Length: 174
Image (cartoon, rainbow, N blue to C red):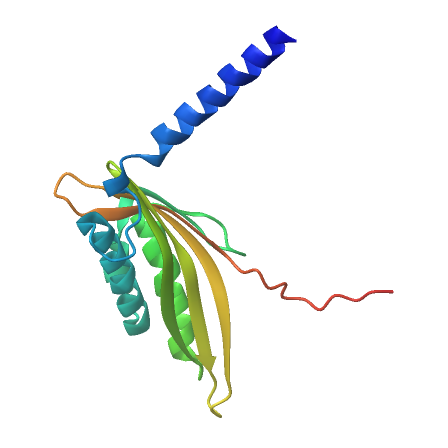
């Protein structure tokens, strides 16, 4: 019994040490008051992404991604590298401009965490679509961005994943 208690205590202490190590220094964690300058830079990149998306600026969006970036967009094949990601946005923007629908994007960043030269940003993109008659629909899409700090101090998106929590098909219950 004593041996089991000792093993449990060592395991708990080990998990606690790992948790403390992963949490990082208090100054490196998310600061909702904007006092962390690195968090502010990550949030600025997200705001710039929204501006570029709404302007149809696929070339600007390309510049937000690291050279080995991976975009895992729901219902689409993975896009690997900034050129592939730019083509995805270019084609989407072309399709939107050819249609009568207007699509706008807003982002709510719920969390930013910094750990050295890596960070993640988590939140919700809200897409609002308006057709030629003025009928509007919106959909929230959750996102998770993993960013890497470059040697020049800028942040680039290394991995990006999004999904919706809404099931797009009606469910029938028999």
